Image (cartoon, rainbow, N blue to C red; front, side):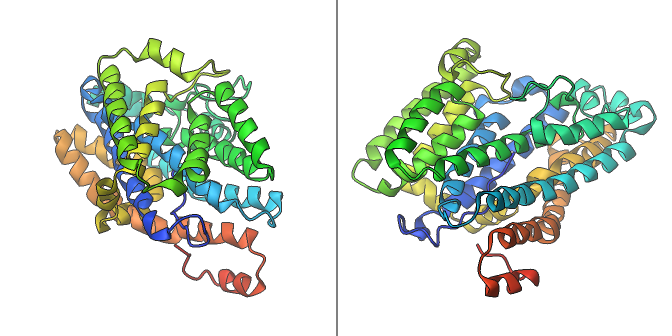
Length: 388
């Protein structure tokens, strides 16, 4: 998933903060896409999933948004680099590790004794996701959060677990969130505008339009495009983005993306779990929304804003609920739609509690680490309400 932090543009003089709340709504919609996609894979026919509803598209949107949000968050040069790094690690890893252990416990309880339930389900992908016979795989999962999983790592690591055998498959994105955060932090520390542009032009062809490339796209949107939202050319850009997105979706639906993927994504030094067409599609989705006011207004309605607020928590905890409760309901003969409804009824309250007692304190701790104001430090020690 991730799920970028909740958007705050209050200290940004480059844009009107009232115009950026739609990003919270977009987070909520993208999170629901990921959740439904996982349920579809587990309990229905994966071949029936529409290309535009693939979870990869939503993950790409999250990476672009992370690049936009972090580009603003890291503008304060007075905060030491090490404080920034530890702050980001605390914000990401504390909720992730807690969600990881919840998944570990739920899967161990639900799929013990030779994976009886998974075997009776007859769902190969569900059986694979619940295949955790030894504790060593679980410890390798923790390593995967830092250096990446075998299927997606950018490091020359030989003994990492496959992402499909992870206790909590969605956590493969956390590694890229950490690396993307460091990449954006590196760019913001370069004072020369000309040097930043030159580095962007060098990095994008090297890393390709994949996970880390989407962070750079978000950075570009934030500093070189976003301030111009609403100008006379927005309608033209929106039309071009919509037509281009329709073309990308058509190529994806025709299953023609492997060849085109290799051309558009660049040569990568590692196997990437995010396909090139999905990366391009997620870029076009964000570009379209930036330039089409009705979509931004739609994303600002209360339900999407609420989902955006708890989206990281939904992303982290929906997996154990899906495998544990969802697997049991599937075994009991409930339909795909009934499983989704039942599990969402359980997931949303759990996500609210997780956001309040795990995610929110981790955000406060991250802000505490980088805070230089003694008055603010005292209030943060008391874990007051986080800023929006």
